[in-house]
Structures are given as C-alpha cells and as structure tokens.
Image (cartoon, rainbow, N blue to C red; front, top):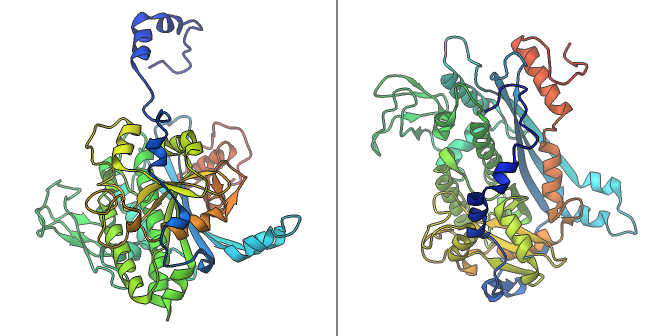
Length: 468
C-alpha cells in the first residue's frame, strides 16, 4: 500500500504488461458467462408467455408497490478518516397502473397524470461505523443497540403504528399471527452456541442470555454484528441491514392488507409487489430467507382458498452477472418469452462446478430471464407455489411451480421505460425516491455527522454547511 499522497511511476505498469507469465495466464482463461455457441442451450429453456397458466389475468392488476433502498458510509473528518457513519434510506413507491397508462395515451405524455399516478414514502436512519460508540459500550454492542432501536422505532408507513420490529416478528410467525419471541442461536456476548430447542428467546423488548446473563436484543436475530468491524469499513454490515429492511417493508404491506382489510383478497389480487434486486438474502442474514419462504407459502395457501394467486411478488435486478448475461443472450430468447435458468445452466455460466447446489441457502424465489415484447431482457425472481423450494427438490425447475410468473411478466411488459436500459417504471421511481447522491450529497451527510457528533466541520469538499 502506498503512503498518503505517494504516486506510482508513470511507467510502473510496463513490467507487468510485458511479463511472460502474465501473458500466459490470459491465454489459459475464457469467460464463463459468454454466449453459448449452441443456441439450443438457450432456446430449449424458453417458452412464450401465452403457454403459461395464470389464475390472475394481468388486467386485474391495478397497482404496484415497489421497495428500494440506498446505503452510504462516509468519513466524518479528514483528521479522523477511520471514524465513519452510515446512512440508510428506504423508500416505498405506490403506482396506479391505470393512471400511468392513461398518461401516455395522447400524442404527448401528460406530466400531471404521471404525478397523480405516483406517491412515495421513505424513512432514513444513521448507523454507527467504526470509532463511534455509546458511552459505556464498545463499538459492537453500540451497533447492536442502534440496529435494535432502528427496528423498534421505525414505522413502515406514517399512517400505521406497525414497526419494522413488528414485521420481523410476523416473519417468524405467519400472516396475522406474529411470533411473541424469537430464538437466538448464538449469544453475541459470550459466543455460546445453543442447541436447537434450548436457545434463549427475545421479545420485542429484548431478553437475556441463559449462559452469561448478557442483554439480548431482537435485532440480534439478524446477526449483522458478526460482520461489524471495529477499525475498518462497515459497508457490508450496513448493506445486510438495508436488504433485510427492504424485505421487512414489503412484508409490512402484505401484513397490513391481510390483517386490516375486510376483504384482503381484493387488494392482494390487484397489487404487484416489486423488490429491487433478487428475492434472496446473503451472508449472515441468509437464514432469514427460510422465514420469508414460510410466510409467502402461508399467503399462497390462503390465497388458494380465495381463488387468487398471492403474493404477486417479484424481484428485479438492474445490474450484476445475470443482467450482463441476459444482455449477451437476449437475441436468442424470442420476444414475449421466458427463459428458465436451470441449476446446470447457472453453474456453467457462473463457473461453478457441476452438481453445485446454487441458491439453496439464499433464495426464496427463482431467477428467470423475461424478454419483453419490445425486446428488453429483464432478470426477475419469482417465488414458487407453497410446498416447492426454488432451488432444491421436486418441481424447482418446472414452469408450473411458479403460478404468478405469467401475470408478473405481463404487467412488467406494460410498464417499461426508456429512462434507463432494460428498466421498468416502478423500479425507476422507487430508486429515485431512495437514492442517496454522491458528491455534494456525501458532503451534506458528512456535515450532518460532524454537527451531530460535535466534531470539527472540515469536509473534504468546500461548501457552505446548512447546519451552521
């Protein structure tokens, strides 16, 4: 690593470029996700939308609720670059699909109707990075307390008293039947691992470790404290929190409709829930995907008794390996068709070994590539029907196991936008509401931290602080 302000030689790259071993290494490699030379590898996995079964017609879906989040970690001051603070912004976007369609029916798009078709709600949080503590506590315990405070005091909507902590308990219980407490498998304080069935349990108010007597918090079930760094960046831990909160916000809307409406089936039949990113959780929060799978299964079974397919839930990816691959093979997928990504195909295009059980521990939905009637490839994740696991067991790779796939694709086909490549309007609007800007935006966030923690106001970018 260089010293601060140390610069490399302008010709320092020449020995590396001319090195024979480096040149030989490139000759040995190939790109795993390259377009298959045999087009049948793609076309054999595709079916037209009209060939899929659907309980709910796309014309019945009138609304879309999209949840998106942004996170950012900034250095507090130049004198203390290792002291960091993190910011989260989570937004829920509501879109009236009939109004958005009507706005584009004339010779020009009607901006008044566009505005009337859309509403949004967002909440923000600040999280302590390295070097920030509560008096009397270390950095890790401060992180745990702040995450718990965030969950217990953040309402998913201004018109509701339900908090993200309530949604976490609902995830561990079921629709309309939230758990009263949840088990903690490993104590964050003494690191004792409890056998299944013997774990201490925590309520929304917390609990106590039966081994060491330390205080436990409901937020400990997320286990993000395991990735907290005392000295470095906590961007990864922050992103884990953001992803869980996005899922909790979507679940909050489902739980609200299910418990607060006389005929929730009328709303759930007409509402598409969109998540930015795949229906999956990674790293230390991955075990929570089983709770989401169980909750969605319960909604599906209830919906079957009402004659509807629910939940209408989809994750849409804007970037990443699968989005790049979808663009490479788009011309091989007929327009208006869906490609199922088998585990064998995924392992080959990601460079994993044959037989690898991709997605089993992280996903509560399965990825598909949908090519719209306009030719745009969309990478989407859709949950299976109850009783089917998306990446293991019988039915995981069958189209019939995903009864909402057709209606989801047909709705998305009608809300495309040219604002961004391969984009849909609901996700674009939600991202606009949730995004934290770079540049001046970071400077404002830094100034806010300096003001709140009472540190010298010496941002790395010169500007007039609005907090003076």
